[in-house]
Image (cartoon, rainbow, N blue to C red):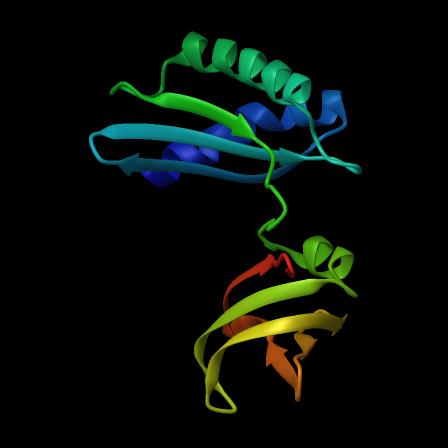
Length: 152
């Protein structure tokens, strides 16, 4: 059910994204405790603000109410990806070149599964990450998760 809700929500929200000149980062439909949450994460160049989130929430809520695809009660949340934005596709990786990233892999590469450092390059197949003492090339098909990382 969760996969269908995510796909349907992506279809419903995409025209709103185009109209508002926003980017859909991710849709999640998850149960936390006894509550269900439909989370829609959006962004734009320069970042989104509360007004952007409110407009998308209002328009998407109307569309969801019309077709009523979710039978159980849920909370709709529309938000920005935050400072540690997930990296999901080629556009995200390309935009993150030169920035600090946190990457985990499905299997060890050079005896490690967690890499944090500057993303030096992305060629469509591999990420090159410069950590403090080493530079590692990570095949994209080995990436379990990737996000921007805040450096303190």
